[in-house]
Length: 133
Length: 310
Image 1 (tube, each protein chain N blue to C red):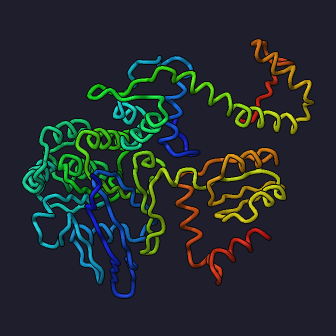
Image 2 (cartoon, rainbow over the protein chains, first blue to last red; image 1 turned 135 degrees about the vertical axis):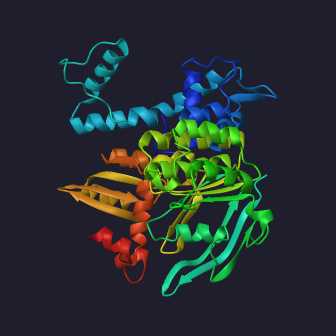
Image 3 (tube, rainbow over the protein chains, first blue to last red; image 1 turned 45 degrees about the vertical axis):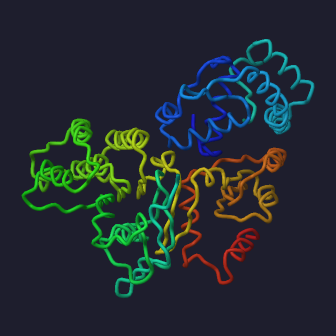
C-alpha cells in the first residue's frame, strides 16, 4: 500500500507494474480508471493520473480514446527485463549486507538461497533469518 | 487549465503588536486540493480570513478569480469558508443553516446535502446551540461540501468528529472532488490523515510561509538514517540535518535530502537503516528548526555544523 518513502505517483506506477509482472493485469486488458485508483487508495485523483501517465510515457500502457487505459503488448517482458537489471542493487546488495552483519559466510548464503528457491523451510525451524528490505 | 484562483502578494496583517501574517505571497491554482498546515497561532485562519474578505490585510493585496473580493458578490458567491467555530443565529437549526447556504451558493446541491445529512446522522431540526461539537462540525462539513464552491476553505473541519466521521468526510470530499473538481484548502493538524489527499502543501509558521511545495515533491525529500553513531555521522557529513536523536551508541539523524540510489546503497554497506519521513514528521522538524529560540546566530548552516560535531 501507499507509504511515505517515495512520491505517491511513483508508488501507483509501481503497483500497476507489479500487477502486470505477476500477470494479474494481462496484456491488452483494461486497467482500472484513475478515479477508481484514487478512491481505492484514498489519494488525490491528479496523483493517480500522474502515476498512470508515467507508464504511458514508458510505453507500458496505452490509451484507447474514450474507453480507457490498456496494457501494451510486450509490457510484461519490458518490465521483467528492467527489474532483472535492478534486482542486484535492490535485493542482492542488502541481502549480502545483512548476511555480513550476521557473520553468514558467502557459501552458506548461497546454500540458503538455493534452499529458499526450492521452497524448503529455514534451517533450525523457528528462527527465520530475513534479509533487510 | 490550472489558472490562478488566488493570487496573494506580500500580505501582512498586524493585530496591535502581533504580526499574524508577515509578507505572505501565495498562488492557488484551479482544481487542486491544498493543505494549509502549521501550529496554532501560526496564521492559518488569518490568511483564510483575508483571502475570503472577512478580514482586511494591513498591507499587500489578494486577487480571487482575478478580482478584489471585498464586497464583491461576483467573487464571494463562488467562495465558501467554513470556520472552525462558525457562529449561527441563536434560534437557528441546521435546517435553517442549510436553507441559508442554498441561497448563498450558486452551485449548492440539495440532493448531495441531504445524502450527507443522512451519512452524518445529523438532527436537522435541533437548534444548533444544542448540538454537540462533532455535530456542529458536521454542519460545517455539509455546507462546505454541498456548496460546491469553486474555492472552498475548511478551517480544521474535524473538531469533535470521531475517526469514522472524519474518514467519511475525507471520502466524500475525494469522491465529490473527482466528480466536480474545484479548489479546496484544508487547514488541518491531523497531517497524516490528510496527507494523501493533498496536491500541494503550504506550511505557515509565525506568519511566514515555511513550505510551499507539491506534496509529491516533499515525499521522500527527507530521510532518517539509523545506526551506530560514528557511521551515521560519517554518512550525514555535508547534509542538512533536521533532527538528531541518540539511543546509547545508536544515532538517528533526519536529513533534509533526497537520497539517491547510490547513497542508499552506501548506507546499506555501512550497515545503516534508512527510514522514510512522513509529511507530519517533516512539518514538525522544519517548524521546530525554524523556531527562533533554537536558531543559532549565523543561521542554519552553523546550527548544522554544531549539531554534526556534537
